[in-house]
Length: 216
Image 1 (cartoon, rainbow, N blue to C red):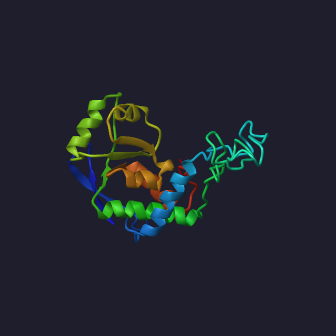
Image 2 (cartoon, rainbow, N blue to C red):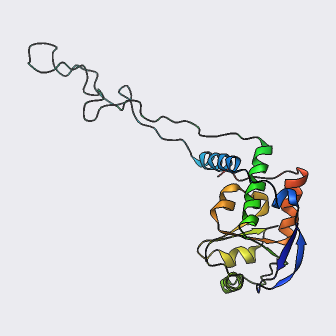
Image 3 (cartoon, rainbow, N blue to C red):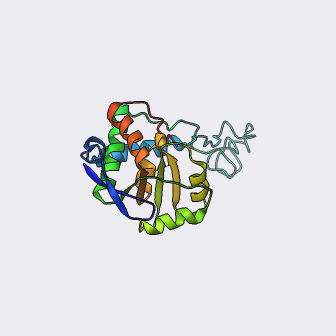
C-alpha cells in the first residue's frame, strides 16, 4: 500500500510502501477490545483487603446474656451488623492477570494500526530530527501537521531530545515502538511514525520477531 510521506513542516515529500498485512488488515473490534481489557486488568495490583468478623480485634465475649434482658440475642460485637464489625463478602487480595495468545495480541495491534489508517489518523514522517531539547520544535511540527488534539509519537529507538521536547506538551506521548500497545494506539487521536519506526513495527508484526508488549 502506498502511503504519503511527510516532513516535519507538514509537506508531502514522497510516498512509502506500507505492508498491507500490518496497515491494511481486516479490523477486528472484538480482539481489540479483549486486548484493551486485558491490558487494563494487568495494571491492577489486586491488593484490596477488608477484615471479616474473624479478623477484627475483639468480640470474643458475648455482649450480654442470652435471656432475660429484653434485648435481641447477640453473640459478638464484631458481627457484621454491628458498627465496627467485620465485613461480609468483602474484597480479598487476588490477581487480575489475564493471558492472551501472542497471535491474538498481534492481531489486535494490526487491527488498531489499520483502523488509524482507515480513519486518516496516521502520519508517516521521513525523519524526526530534533538537535536539542526544545518544546517549541515539536509544538511547531504538530501545528504544521494539523494536529490539534492528542498525538502519540512512536520512536524506533530511544531519543532523549525528542522525549524531552515532547514531555511538556499536554496530550502528547512518546513511546518506543517495541512497546507498541493497543491502549496507547486507541487512546491517542493521531499516531506519528518516523519511517524507521515503520520498518521496526513491520518486522515484528510481519515476521514474528520478539516484541516487548506493554502490560500496564
